[in-house]
Length: 465
Ligand code: F0G
Image (cartoon, rainbow, N blue to C red; front, top):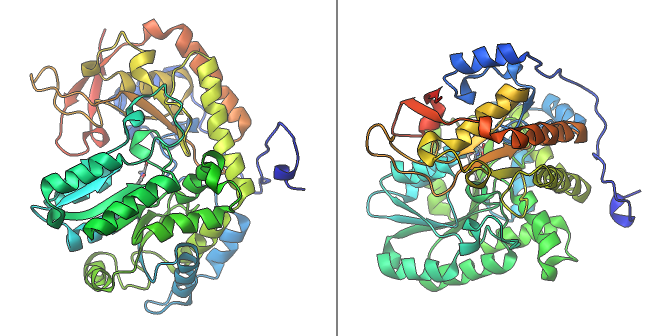
């Protein structure tokens, strides 16, 4: 039976559970102390003191029994391991790209790529870069420019493809900076930094056209390519009758290559790759790879990791899985809205983003409302989430007189894949209902130690009265 062939209202988890892991129960008194000790930074909380962990969907996936058996087939040879060829051919089959380079995780692919094509005076244009991608572009001396569609910033609008690139702005920017200075056009699918929203085939075609006209390379940051493909099937009428692998292939066909963190749609706990057609880039990338990651047939991974990724990439394209996956995220979103919590609409692929500016208008951006909510959620029930607002995306502090707020104040609840069930989500909704009823009791925070790069990882804060 396939639930796609029937009219059942209930969409079930398409797996049964063979191996379980206990959740981290704790008391409120304990959590209060832990928060103080952690400097109100949830990265400093021991994971076994977290009940439900929505910090990230990255590397937190449950592997299938087929992946675990593939792990046992891992060939750990230094060079030319059989597992590399399994990995390479799985990726070639899905993407159609000629050359595959494994790396230990997505940001290693970013660092290598921008060492090859970046550098001072160059530009990288994107729908929106993820923060490590931006840091690697800027680390190479290049300038990163985000060109999302306008609707991406309008949280209440129900537009289906808020992950799209603003095509007019893309062409305008190419003309403004000069095509010869554009190192790359990159589409992040789905667009993690802007609500996990998908990009459409139509928009990718538009980007392709512009890139061809100006002879610019076009890559995908395809960490969540399968979720993007499923949302295309649901939301883009022209693609409704295509299978998920067909849609994924259309996405890849429109670009010249991809960077992938396999810790998301690879359904594994570590790994990544770049897949490219440009032989010159591949040659240079391999030289850098050997310095930092290892020989090009393992790239910082064990043979068993390569096997698990190859199998994960196959499993993630299963429509029954994606239906459950996207439905779980949507279910959390709908529940939160019912509980009086505004979210970024419509729910995207991997996470629900709470619109904290609307939810907690009494906390100004310089008191880090997203982080205040993250701490309140942890204190209330041990649930861990991730602030995407003035702490992680802004700079300076009000006390230093140099505070720059982020464009948005969001709280991301990212769903690990195949890990939690509906009752975990129901519980989360119930906790948010309590927070919504008592939201005036949530107070802002003060940042005690500031740092220039990715400060949210090391930040220490204290509660304001
Ligand atoms: N690109 C996107 C779109 C990502 O979301 C991430 C990671 C990366 C690249 C980097 O990959 O972690 O394997 O080095 N995102 C995680 C997150 C960390 O929580 O969203 P990585």
